[in-house]
Length: 396
Image 1 (tube, rainbow, N blue to C red):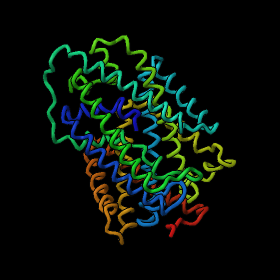
Image 2 (image 1 turned 90 degrees about the horizontal axis):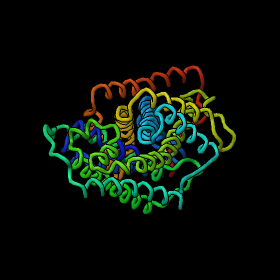
Image 3 (image 1 turned 90 degrees about the vertical axis):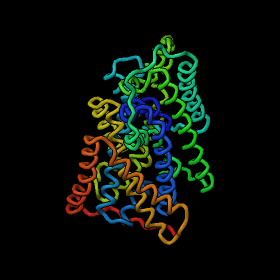
Image 4 (image 1 turned 180 degrees about the vertical axis):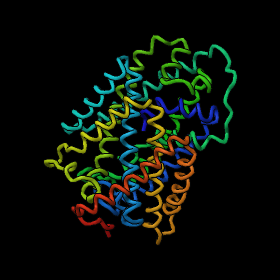
C-alpha cells in the first residue's frame, strides 16, 4: 500500500481537487475497504488464485468474468508501470536505464522465489516510514517561503481525486485472497489486518498530504513529478534529496513484487479457463512461466511511454471497474446473508462506479476499451480451443 501512491499520487490528486483532496483520502479508503471485504468472502468460497475473477464468472456470467479479468490484468500491469516510473523518477540515475534495470531486478527476484515477508517485510516497512518521516518533519518544521496564490478550490472534484488516491490503497488482496500454496490467515486476523492496514495507510497519506501541501501549496504540488523531493527543496533541505530519493526508489521493489504476484495469480486462472493462450501458463512446478515475462515486458513499455501519474490514473480506473464487478458478484454470493458484509459489497459497488466515472475522460476511454476488449477476445478464443479446467464452484 505504501508505495507509488503516497510518493507520487498526491500530485495528480492535488492537480484535480486542490486542497479539497484531504476529503478524497477517507473516500478512497472506504472504497478499498469494501472491496477488500468482498474479496475476503470470495476467497473463502473459491480457493486458489483468481478467487474474485472466478466468483464474478460464476455469479455474473462469462462476459462479466472476462471483463473483470481484463481490467485486473491491465490494472496491475499499469500499476507496475506507474510504480517503476515513480522509482525511476526518484532514483538519481537516467530514467530509461533505471526503468529497465528495476524491472529486470524484480524479474530475477521473482524467478528465484524471493518473498519479502517476516522480518524482511517489517524492515522494509520501517524504511518506508523512515523516508516519509524525514520529508514530513522537514516540511512541518521549516516555514514555507511564501504564501500560495491562485489556489485551486474544486470541492466537486473530490470523487475524481479519490479515484486517483484509490491507487494508494491497492495491495489488500495479498491479505484477503492468497494464491495457490500461499498461507491463508484466519478470518479474524484478516479483518484486523484490513482495518489496521487501511487505517494506517489513510493516516500516513493524510499526514504526507498536509505536510507537502503546507510547503508547496496545492498549485505547485499539482505540477510536481516528484512531490516529496520538491517539498524538501522548497523547505531548504536539498541536502536530504539524494538519500530520500534512493530510499523512495528502494521501497517500491516489494510493491512491484506484490503487483506481479497478483497479476500472475489471476492470469494463470484465466489461462486455465481457456480465455488466454495456454502457452502462457506453461511452467515447471511453482517456477516462472511465459506469462511473467509478458507482464513485465508490457509494464516496461508502458513505464517508458507513460508518466507515473498517467499510468496511475489508468491503473486506478481499471481496478475500480474490476472491483465494481467483484462487489457485484459478492453481493450475489452473500444474497442469503443480510449482514454487514453484504451491505459493504453494495456500498463498494456504488462507490467503485462513482469514482471510476469521475476519472478524466481519456482515462475512462482507455478503461472502456479494456473492459470491452477482453470479453470479445475471450469469446473468440473460446471458439477455437476448449477450457482446460471446469469452472470453479463455491466451497461448501
